[in-house]
Amino acid sequence: MLKIDKAEEPQEFVDFKKTHPKQWDEIDNVPGLKKRLRDYLLEHEQKINSSYCCVYCERKISLERSHIEHIKPKSVYKADTFNYQNLTVSCQEDKDKVKVKGLKRNLKTCGHYKENRFDEAKFINPVLDYPKDFFTYDITTGNVISREGLSGKEQGKANYTIDLLNLNHAYLADTRTEIINNFRSIENREELLYVLDHFDQFPGVVDFFRSEYLDIWSEMHAAT
Ligand SMILES: [Zn+2]
Image (tube, rainbow, N blue to C red):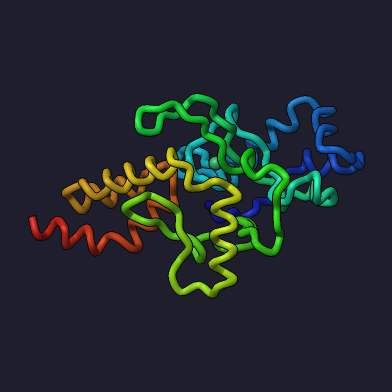
């Protein structure tokens, strides 16, 4: 999960809210506003190197293949429908698009998987919380897991959030494993650091590798 540092709310959205919209769909009354807002969120809050990443799964997304995600579901938290602090951008569901072990699978995760289920007390909010404090990775499975040393309550939050967003879908886990294995196979330290610096998706995995795996990598390659 990305850490979202909210940028200044775009003026066009502020102006639109002065018309007192009640339903989210009313945003379509201003042609193109929804897309411009999505573009703004991606450009200012979810850009990793030159790419845009999904707030939850961290895979690369595009302006066309993404949607504005209400962290607190708008159907339940009506007062937060137009609250800029509640808006981020998440991936679209991919139907039949991904292959896991040779089989076509639907990739339904993140905002579209979560739908209207939401327990505010348990959800790790990328705007308010620091996801890095809660999550790390299992290097053999590629799964997101809760960090060691968390309290029982914090661990519960991490696991609840992982399940609610389906962050350990086999496609995501396999992709993370592949990325980690690619990093591991790089022989030269300069090259590895360059690749880590310029990698344009899954910043959590990059960060994990840099902060928790670099020493192991050094030992592995010193021995050969
Ligand atoms: Zn996603």
